[in-house]
Length: 386
Image (cartoon, rainbow, N blue to C red; front, side, top):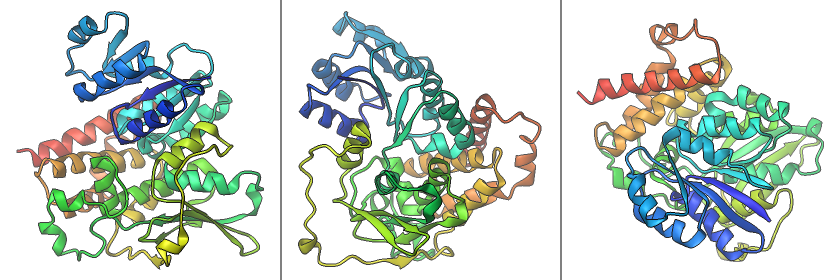
């Protein structure tokens, strides 16, 4: 039986992980979970799955929780997240479904213990991909992607020779605002941006999908995960969200992974990697009728070239890219900026030599990546919360 340590239990991915656990009680047991603020949902999860350890956000009164659940151990904040990631169990599986840079250090600590990490937290590899992949190698630990795009590539490449890869092709739905012009973005509401046509996801990733920053992050992740040069990773717009990624091989053949747009599938594959286990999510191509593909207009969606730029610059550039985006998305969700300002501010950060000069003297390690992350966010919040 796999013992699950679940970071981000109350979010979209965490909830779907628990669906699979609930339907397979002989295969999985939830031993440790974290949640941030959703106390009502967390209480339901604790009552149902009875984990031994629960980590909660700093704003939660864990003393009151302890009164309700006297036999459960509670922890708070980053210390709590690290304890969930390293909780001592037999046959541990760490699932990182956290949103944002907060997911980076728990991933690192789990890898240091040689644990498999099922990764849905994009920011871990975006901010610190070189360090994280090195930790996995040093400790003989696996990083198994949960993102549908990277899950698709992992499925395609199982049993394949990496030397035969010509190109990775990520598909993008285009998000909720694909047909909006740049001038129209200035009046887009939060509700419009959150109305994704195909996927049910958390607010942050849905906004990232609308700006295509999500796809920029996925390019960076794919380069780390599959050791493919970034100039051999392409994106095509595929509005139907049925083809989740493709791989072109040196002979010109292209293999694609198809499935209904439902995150239970990549989660189920990650839990059973590299095997496919039964799941009642069936694809009927006759009902879809057609699959369409088109190039991305990178003048309209400048987040993609910005992501490539940050990746190639290396060092703290990816952390600054991510921190700027994370701060601006939060500001947009609080109705303090317009959605077009997200891309504008990322552009400014990437080409702000004064900003980057602040970090050039710092040794490149996880501690300083997190310091840079917080510093950039503070600067953006100060700029727009006046």
